[in-house]
Image 1 (cartoon, helix red, strand yellow):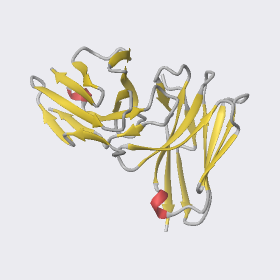
Image 2 (cartoon, chains in turn purple, blue):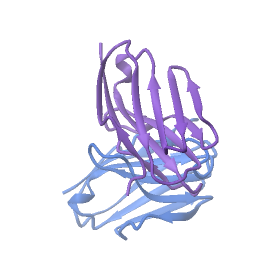
Image 3 (cartoon, helix red, strand yellow):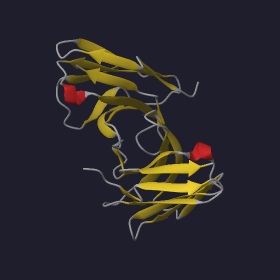
Length: 111
Length: 113
């Protein structure tokens, strides 16, 4: 079964707007990761946040983690058409390599 | 070299065929993974190799047989597949299990006819 659930399932915004995606998970985790996938190609690692971290930034990306609520959010600021993709959260509960992906959010950024 | 290379990019095979998917990385990563992804679904973990040894098999049918000949190579041998096995097969690697982000290949699009 998949560990992470994401919402919304689909998001459509205009270029320049911010996009926020949420991820909830069920068990305790060691870290949570976010990935981007462009139309059926390989996934690209965006950011990893460890269980003892609350917020992390990378360029236009901001990730938060709330372990008490078992949830994370990914914020993409000043979105661009090139940000159009599917975004997945993934969690590792055991440091064994068992990285489990959420259902994903499909983001469309209109020029 | 910061890539994971998968070959072939596309594969069409009959249900009686035997084929292999190949994955290669030269980043010195010691963990490698096979994932299966159906259309509009998230990737599903199949196998994990750590230091060239199989550490996780997610109850994958025996018609899928992984092999790790050395620290840079990962193969997935396919035999007697079913049409429902048609999917995108993704290989990934990481420095070690899960504490670092994974680097994914661009996948092999497999169609079983």
